[in-house]
Length: 391
Image: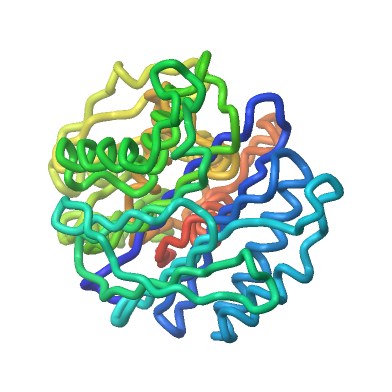
């Protein structure tokens, strides 16, 4: 991907109150060799398991067809033919919004029956012209196709109708929040925080939609996807001392010369940086947590945490979700990772004898293994650009 432009993708969802699974499906895929990213949001008919099946099938088929550049209307008709038919309404139905973008080219957006996407440029909403194509086979199906050229700081926002219809029937929102209400909210969030991340903005939209609902309980599946075009945010993560102590100075030089944010994970690692760069390190008592060791504060370093326990908890959070109410080292590191685009891991390979104690929990992974798990999930699930260097 280009050093001058990066696409951060953030999404947030809330299933309908009383349902065990999402009726909407969100799926994004990076194709590095084509410098291309495809992101899809599909809303299945109804809610619960049946809706999940419909939206999941639609999303997977749409990804395959768009990735292979198959003719859009034909691929849409194939999807409609393949979807199960609702026994009550006698229709097979799932909406979709697709963003197909290349970093050094144009972005195409295909929409069928979802609320129209929002396009934000220069902190203002821009109306993008579109053309309609119709299916001869499915007379009630219309697909809108839009095209635009990427610029730095552009944002594209997709949403299901659970966002625009939030609060419908509530005396304060008899017709729902509506697209304009959501758009006004988005512009205000960006005005207050022009560099708000895609993840934070998507979560803010979903939470605001839920707040409109009666008793704050979602009356439908609520989903939002945000694509944010920006210069890449870089992060250096150091963990573990070098195998050879003679390389400690080289290790520290990586920190002092890095063009981006820096996180240090591990007490010994922090001691090396403190000594080699003549920095002062102090305990950060505001990060107290019963399960995760406290952070430290070091001049010029964005985050200093304990090592293996913290990294193991970070991996769990990346899999299952972050508890934003906590302020411990794992939560801070997970947030920092998700708010970064290009992440460079430097892993020291000196064995820590403390981690060879057979009485320690089995899930306490050795450093290299847990780092591998973290960078894989960051690549596969969050589409981050990752490099790993062992020293």
